[in-house]
Image (cartoon, rainbow, N blue to C red; front, side, top):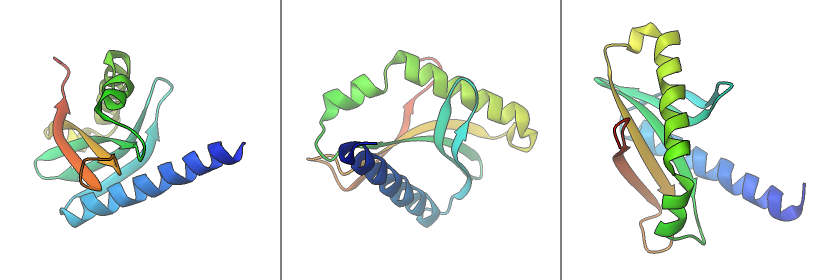
Length: 125
């Protein structure tokens, strides 16, 4: 892996660590991190009654809102939603929870260091 790729990986892990700490600080339980299925991955799955929250972490120290819109396109959102449905099927104890899809933006210029967008998207958006 190139040094640029290694740096991006390290920055991504650091952003996810900060995101997990943020949600813990908000009173959420972290159920899973980097939860994968054959069709998708969810960065963080958190729970705080009554919400089961599927979090996409985006680390953009040199980015802007247009990059975020591109990275969370229709296909990416659909994969996250389908992966979330599979999680709920597998862990039925959460089936009565409200599902929410959040985005946590890390280090994007012009925004706070951790910028939390609750209900960033839904199955109908």
